[in-house]
Length: 467
Ligand code: UD1
Ligand code: MG
Image (cartoon, rainbow, N blue to C red; front, side, top):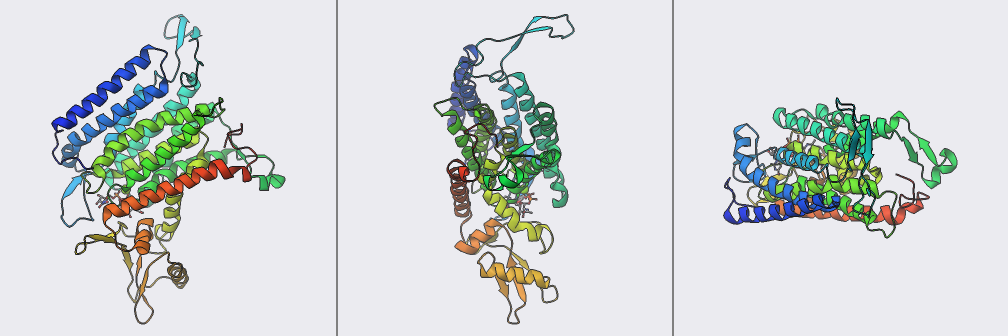
């Protein structure tokens, strides 16, 4: 899985990447000359993005280390450092890719007459813009949404690199993605401004079919934009897990998008799902390249930039594609990890700088990391009751002394909890198991979305009502 440690690409790697890029560029040139199938172009560009990210991560590693972007792998017996913040490389490659993609999905407004000075006095719309399923092109209003997504993503990349540089404190970090969502929300307001939500059938007698959240809808969207990046950044700390969870979520979202494209009849939500695919495919491409370096034993770390950027992509497609509830179903492990972490995040239990599992150098395995308690400093009595209850439910490991005083409690993360359940595991084994858990939960979420949603909503958006 892992490439060699040198900074230059081997002969076979160079040949492989060059052939992949050449084949993809040939496909892109072909789609551009003809009517152009945007989806095919997006796939081909994503392969180029994979090749570029793979090469650039290798070349730029030492440069990043020289600039101070380096981190020590805390779960290894040796104390070597590896380049940190490689998500920034992925973000740059991704942004270039989605910008280069603009001519493919948006049709041209050809200027027929102009009074000069850049005025577009008479504009002709290109013909045949709606031919076929995949030849379908978007009008310029959709370009505004696309560009707002790019601005939000650029902002989060900038703020993410800032976080990796300055190691911002958690209570301040929380707001970073909220700031980055502003461009998205502003364009949503100008372009769409639909703030209704569909009420579940059981509540409709009291609240009606639709409920207007008004400005609160924008707060809801900002919360999604804050939750996705931070919750991914919190499910972290072992080699590969940041990227593998994002890849699973992105692949499941793309699979969900394909379900809408493969219906035998044109579907009202096709545009939203095509749009989502265009933003997801290049991210899948660069994430695959990053995973090859970040998987156990990691040659690079991804940095907060990767977690923020990835979470922001999910938020952007969920918001602009109007499937934020489906997104929520795919992020259940992250939601659980966040809720489970709350006692530590809100200071009821001390929260160390790192809560990642503890490496046992003797066995080479990971064990749950713990918060130590002294006889003088015990948790508040109410917290003690809560922790004992969690211990009884096997949701925590509490160690007490012979007087019944707390000695240590396992840190409240899903990774530690998994180790409480499964016993000590090797790092890659833990990463595999949690990734498969993410996949299983996500697939179940999609099943709920497509098979059980009708129990709660009259029409799902296979009909006409957007989520
Ligand atoms: C979040 C978690 C923190 C966890 C950290 C791990 C919360 C509130 N914060 O903090 O508990 O310890 O992520 O990323 O839940 N590292 C490894 N191996 C890896 C990945 C990271 O040892 O596979 C270490 C490296 O020293 C690396 C550092 O973690 O330099 C990166 O930590 P950072 O992403 O800055 O931590 P936070 O996101 O602030
Ligand atoms: Mg982090």
